[in-house]
Image 1 (cartoon, rainbow over the protein chains, first blue to last red):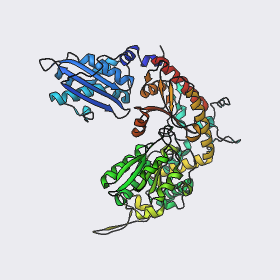
Image 2: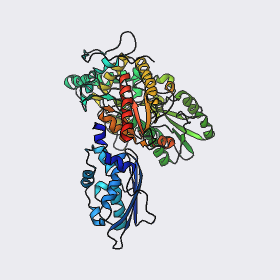
Image 3: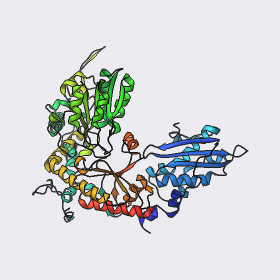
Length: 141
Length: 435
C-alpha cells in the first residue's frame, strides 16, 4: 500500500464518493450551516427529532469541500442517528477522529470536525444545549 | 523545449558567496545550497518547495546577517549616545538605503518600515482614507486583489460613507480595464491594485491604471508583495503613489516589510500609529509629528529584521532580478506545459507571457470527479511537495472562477525544472488514488 492509499483509505473515499444521509431534510426541527474559513469547506446539517423530542431520528447533510470534511460528516451522520440530543451535545471530537482513524494534522482536524461543530450549533439553537467555546466560532448565521 | 538541467552534485556548499552561473542566468541547485531548510528530508524525500508566493525560504546570508547584528551591533536605534546605539542606527538606516535603491525611490525617507505589506496597506487606508474619503467618493479595488489591498479599503470606505467597487476581470484572468468606463463621472479617490496577482500570477498593467487614476485626481495604491521578490521595480516609472512590500516573500525575515510613498503624500497624511519616536514635540494638550519616516514608525523598529531584509536585497541583487525573472519565466512555461498535459487538470489565469511564476490549478480524476485542493495538497505533501491549497486570500476571485479553492504552485530562484516534473508526477498519482 502506498503512502497515498494509506492516508486516503478506501472507506474514507467511499464515504466521500457515496456519502451517507446526503441531502437536507424537508421539514427539519433543527438546521445549521458552517464553513471552514481556511479552505472554504461548507457543511449544512438538518435534523429531525423523534416524538420524544430527544432522540435524533433523521439527519441529512449537504456540503462542498475536501474528502476529509465530507467523509467525516458522512460518518458523523451514522454516529449521530439514534442518539439523544444530550449525548450528541457532549460527543467528543475524539470519538469522530477515532472513527476516521488516520493521523490528521491540526489543519486537517478542523476539516474533519466541521460537521460535528455544525451539528452542535444546530442543537444549541433548537434545544439550547451548551455550546462549548471551541465550537462557537462556527455559530455565524 | 530543452531538457531539464541536470542537478549539480549535492556537495555544493555555502562559501559565503552567492552561487551564480557565470555564463548567464542562475543555477537553482547551487543557490539551494545557500538555504539550510533544504538540508532536511520530509517523508524521506528532498523538499520541493512550491509555496514561495506565500513565504520564501531564507538563505544563510540573511540568517547570518541577523545573528551578526544581534551579536555585535544590537541596541535600540535613534536613542543611544553610546557607540553601540550608533552602530544599530547605522544598520537600520543602511537597510533603509538598500530598500530605497532596490525600488529606485527618490528619497530614503519615503521608505517606511512596517510589519508586512498588509500593515503598509492598512497604513495608507487608515491615514489617507479617513482624512480624504467621504460620501459620494468612490474607492476601486481589482477583483484579483489579495484581501490585504481589498478589505482595508472596503472597510474604510464603509466607515467614511464612500462607495466601494471592483475593477472586474476578463475571462482570461486579466483586468478588464475597458470596464473602467463605467466609473466615468464618479469622484474616484483611490485605485487599489496588485502588481502581480498572488492567486493567478497575472501581471497587471499598473501604468495604464496609474494614468487613468491620476487623470481623475485619484491615488494608485499598489500591492507589490508578489512582484518585488521576482522582478525589478522602479517606483519612478511605475506610476504608483504607494507600493507595499513584505520582506518575508523576498528571502527576508518575517516581521518586516515596507511602504514606499511619495513624500508629498506622506507629508500630507496623519500618522497611523502613535507613540514613541514618531513625535516632534509632545505638549500637555497637543503633539506635533516628527519628520519622515519617523512620523510613521512609532515604537521600536524591527531592527534585526530590517538588517535581514537588507541582506536579502543584497542576495537578490547579487543573483540579479533579471536572472530571477528569466529563470522563473522558464519554470512557469514548463509548469504550464506539464500540468496542461494532464487530462483533468484545469489551469487558471493568463498565458505564460503575462504571468509571473505562479500557477493555480484544480485537479479532477480522469472520470471527471473533482479532487478538492486540500486533498491534492495533502497527497503532494506525502511526496514532500509543498503547495498552497485554499482561496489564497482572494475570495472575490474564487467566486469569479466559480470554485471554493485552488491549488497553487509558486516558484522562486531555488526551484528547478525537476521540481515541476515531480509536481506533475505527484498530481497524476493523486488522480489515481481518487479514481
